[in-house]
Length: 293
Image 1 (tube, one colour):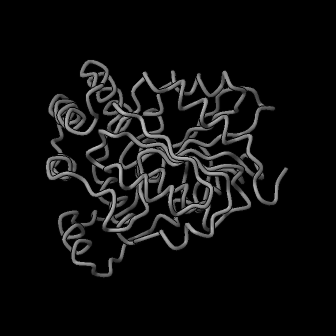
Image 2: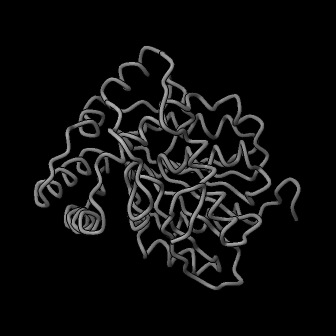
């Protein structure tokens, strides 16, 4: 645990201390442990010092005090294009990630974000470009309302009220994963992952605060055009939660960004693509970043 921006952040590190630092940023309501240790090992094998952490309102990091926002009301306002206020924004979460780098005395790192984590690393690239050596945005989007929108089935699964008892929570998580994970969905693995997440930290209110942060931040497209950090965008063709146009728009907004589309990947990171993903991250990490190298 380390104190960052007046909150406590839980993190862990893997790989050689002298390796290039690589920060993994997880998505909505997800704990750092969703970065599967098998995928982490792929990155370590390529020489990286890999850092995982729990975002605020997830896992063992600090939780926001007070009642969570009304998610359905936020969604309605967002669809109507109305201004949304929130306890914090994606900029705050980007500041948290940079603060963790400060605490670890890391001047700049390669950053990889999945889903909401992709949105956070985009904000890092926009607002803290000198702290990034490269950026990888996985199964994410720009925040524009005309791209990356979920299917009706996916949004219904995401916004469904959360049960509270362990078995029901696990069942609900597996049901949601079945909807969004694509044809490589592994029910046994999803069930194990859901149980481990519940036992480590069950905090459904955290997702509501994070959804508010996403909604309050809005469209990043124009700001992404200023990004000069070497950028990789990865997306799954079968993603129903953040559909492929979100990844395509992200890659189009960042000059020189590489786009990789995995044909059977949904809103998940199936083992089938771990090695290819790690290879692509390693490749973008070797590109010269403006102001470095």
